[in-house]
Length: 276
Image (cartoon, rainbow, N blue to C red; front, side, top):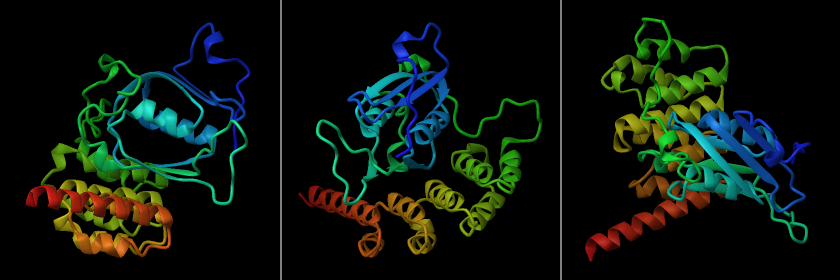
């Protein structure tokens, strides 16, 4: 795992930068995060960069996060940053054992979108609630008079995958485009994008906007995707379709199978409670 060893502990900095992430797996406080009014997406990307862990997420609240989190593993720090109500799935290295006194970091983490849809989840682990703005994804403060929806539709055709994925993620929660047929067209086109990141955002956006039942065919298609992250995103958006979840139990990826089983267990529990 690639790491960056900080030359000075965070506490010794005379003037903190808006965002500081230090990773050192050789100590029990191996991951240190200090953020001051930093966009949550930028913060997660920096953690991924410094730790070498692949972080997958869909729609994130556009919130400036102020937090100080220290932990032995990325799991501990992410739980601190995102709060206890956010669900995550982890993939750990195979055939690797932690050294005495140390804990393994995951290779990949999926932050499950369905658990981020509630109000003010992000930042609650360590951030002051007053630091969290109420701005929704998709708002635009630029001088461009073009509507936010049209700006996002243009960005969805950008050259870089990151820009396309960001546009798709914002279209998912853009209220101005709720009944815009052109948005649906763009999202369906993005399902076959050459970038797995864009495809994952596309299936999440469609399910989030239109509901699981309305996009069951697209969810089934996404479950056949060559990328495990896309398949994981599809499973994350299945809440009541037992057939699709059973299909996901046969996936070649352990993370996808585990998430599908968790969803099935939760569905069975809900049905049992309803019958009682």
